[in-house]
Length: 282
Image (cartoon, rainbow, N blue to C red):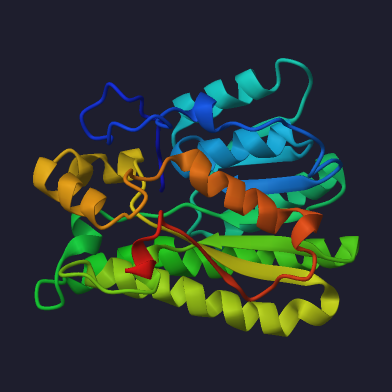
């Protein structure tokens, strides 16, 4: 699953840049998601944590779906300090039965499901091998989390969203779902599959006002990238590929997800929101 933390400027794997903490990126909160209910997978840390926090600040009730119980329970407690707005659930996103259980619980508890953010993902050695070095079992594992789980989350949400008269599914892909690189065959392919799946679902369910969009982060500092961004040569190469002069922070991505989840994007479906500091513009 995707997990993450917010890195401060004093840590070596983050570029020295004036906007390198979550606090400096936060904007005034409002009610952009007032009355809405959301599920965020990989929601206990990284991009998922930033999204869970932002959604709750904007008035949504949030199911934090993750496999890290310590972080998930801590975040639930923190977000609920002024009333129940968050619910942590241990969640293997590759299991359809678990999706059904959690969506049913949301409907029983809160009566509606408006937003699903399919953010959970994996990379690591299983996803970064070249084509010739790819092991089929690793390929299948990466696809289960990065692609099949996206389908399951979307599929399970549709009947619940239909009862509301619509909803928003946001599938977190990657810049590497659009462009290639010297490694990462399984990761690229699985993220590309999530991208194209989002377009297909968007066309199929647009008549029911169920919107499906994908988000494509560029090089972003999260625990999933900690191992690779801790390598100075790779970190510096990625920084050099980013025209804005810093790597991304989880909140950079979360604000894009918020837009696609909110009614501000009511006429937006089947689109690919690239948030990459200008990388793809080279």
